Length: 252
Image 1 (cartoon, rainbow, N blue to C red):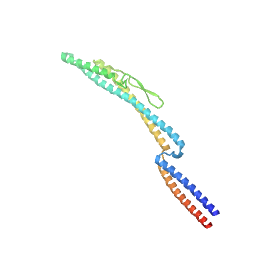
Image 2: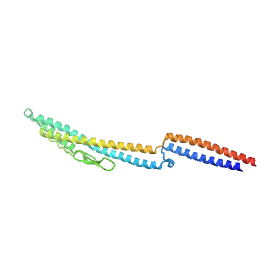
Image 3: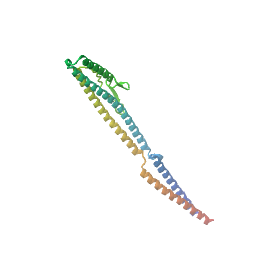
Image 4: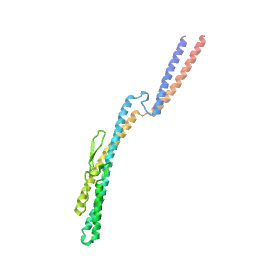
């Protein structure tokens, strides 16, 4: 009976080994198929850290998109200022041409006046242009530049109404140049903030991936190992059962 008992114990132990090996195989398969390391509770702490990192990364990405709105606003203002600069240049050309008044006849003088009037009217429309109902030249508005709601106030806040005349065009040219400088500085600053946010988002996502993503080399090795152990254990179960049957046959 001792032989029968030993054979039964051997079969039981081999069966337990086979069950553990199958569990290891299933765990490795789950990690390989899902790409997630924390399957089967493999890394609960890591999953929590990864969740926080991903929340941080996605918040940074949304903040970067908010900054993009500010950049678009300033670029719209910059385009409007460049149009005003072109119109102001033409006004100055006409003003200088009118200085030669003794040589101009009434028709030529009238044509210059008409063009100046048209330019001033067009400039007025540009000066009042808006983006999402916000004036791109006269407004200074705040855009969030990080995930904590900190604001950066952007905009030239420099409404420029053009008028004809040499002196007027000189003054207007100076105002336009100053406003363009302010716009360019604002765009540069916002792009700097945006670059930082994009980097933060990418780094957070990469860190989360390192914490949660499956180590495919290790999981593949685990799958092969547990597959071999399972096969070996099942062979031992079969062998133990055969030995048990042989002992019982002898006893009978």
